[in-house]
Amino acid sequence: MTLPKFDLLQPSTLGEALEILSTTQNAQPIAGGTALLVEMRGRKAEPGVLVDLGRLGDLHGVAPAANELVIGATTTIAELLKNPHVTERASILRDACSTFASPLVRNRATIGGNVAQGSPAGDMAPALLVLDASIELRSVRGKRLVRAVDFWKGPRKTTRKSDEMVVSIRIPLSQTPWLSSWKKLGLRKADAISVASAAVRLSLTADGKCEGARVAVGAVAPTPLRLAKSENALVGKPISREAIAQAAAAAAASSVPINDVRASVDYRRRVVEVLVRRALMEAAWEVLT
Amino acid sequence: MGGADVSERKITLRVNGRTHEVSLPGHRTLLEALRDLGHTDVKNGCEKGDCGACTVLLNGRAVNSCLVLAWQADGATIVTNSGLGTADDPHPIQTAFADAGAVQCGFCTPGLVLSAKALLDANPNPTEAEIREAISGNLCRCTGYSQIVEAVRLAAVRSLKGSGEASHRGQSATDGSHSPSGSRVTGEVQ
Ligand SMILES: Cc1cc2nc3c(=O)[nH]c(=O)nc-3n(C[C@H](O)[C@H](O)[C@H](O)COP(=O)(O)OP(=O)(O)OC[C@H]3O[C@@H](n4cnc5c(N)ncnc54)[C@H](O)[C@@H]3O)c2cc1C
Ligand code: FES
Ligand code: FES
Image 1 (tube, helix red, strand yellow):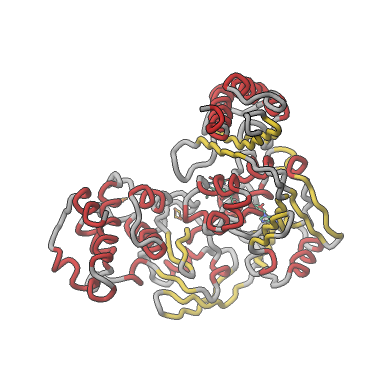
Image 2 (spheres, protein in one colour; image 1 turned 135 degrees about the vertical axis):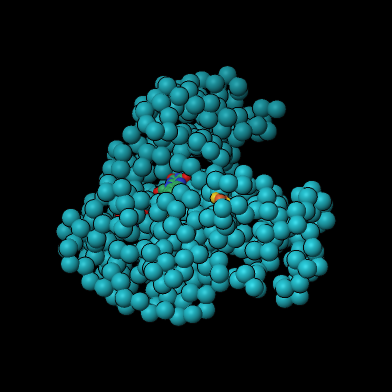
């Protein structure tokens, strides 16, 4: 079956792309197309005009700066997976890329498309939440930075306005040595959308006191969530199996999952507790054993 | 809603070393364009990124051609399974698939061969886990994957032993084995 008809515009500069988005009715960006073309085939999206971001070179690549990592919106998941700066300075993002779809999809799918699509099951979100990343939006009206915690508003709803583009993801780099872990459960090991996922980062003192904790989960609420209650169960205390169990229970209590083709409400709530516990155990493993 | 009047544009696709100029509208996929040009070794399985039957190498990277718009591939270099080798002059990976019994109905094979090619280009001596990961976007409903994994391993082992052109044609003749055991083959290089 063919795709619904649309006009495809292929601007070569960001300015041109933003101009089109601000002046054209029913226009939408297309980056890797791995989410959008599938939605269009299912007639879940019928944009009249697609604006291809593939020719905007300045939106592409990873630029390390002194205090942040700037990731261009059209950088692919495969490129992130191989990027030494990402591996060294934002390893949880690399981990989330390693379980993302299949190598075929990863060669096209972009981080900007994942963030902008706003799926509660998007795998970049939990990692970006625990990294405290910000999303840089641009339009002809100007630019703004939105923290990841404020970006996702509901299933497929974000703070992005229709004339705005995600141009970069900015990850602050801290001096704190963080321990991190990513756990994803899909219906099979590879090439599967998350049924539930968890990303955690811990900062522990040499004697095992938890000085900082960040916990985020995906696919168990209308948006990806950062979980203050789970974090509060850990911070300021010596890390222990008990504290981890409490943080995991808080994650289940904070989640508001849905029933869908992949899993039930009850299953998701149970499984997110397990994923958060496993992620925290793995991150804290050296100290706990 | 979808614009009724969509215009065509002429684009250039370089497929298996041949240059095609085609006129088509922006909503046609690379998969459709390639099949219309006669490259029917690129299979249409699901058209939503799930099966990998439509795999091609796009500027050297293995992608689902059903998720690429043809215009996005304007000027790109594309390699399909028949670009690697033919029945008369098969590529070592294709020979290995035949020798390992990795082909049953064959619908998944062109895509799998290309995913294997992308893997071996980047990593000539992959572990079983790396092979399974590399082919995870290619579904096979017949073989159960064991022979496919074995085929990729066999292709790797043969090219590590011989090299380049020398191993290309003489492969199946010198080796002669039709279903080598996975463990023996693996043992040779580790
Ligand atoms: C087989 C398969 C498996 C998958 N597995 C996973 C998985 O494991 N994990 C996961 O998270 N996702 C998965 N996905 C979904 C999809 O691949 C990802 O969400 C991907 O990151 C989308 O990026 P894209 O570049 O392809 O976006 P596109 O499809 O091009 O766009 C997605 C949406 O974002 C908008 N958009 C794109 N770029 C921008 C931008 N720069 N600014 C503003 N808006 C923009 C588009 O208008 C569209 O609404 C899978 C998809 C398939 C087909
Ligand atoms: S036809 Fe493209 S992945 Fe199935
Ligand atoms: S051989 Fe039939 S699908 Fe793989």
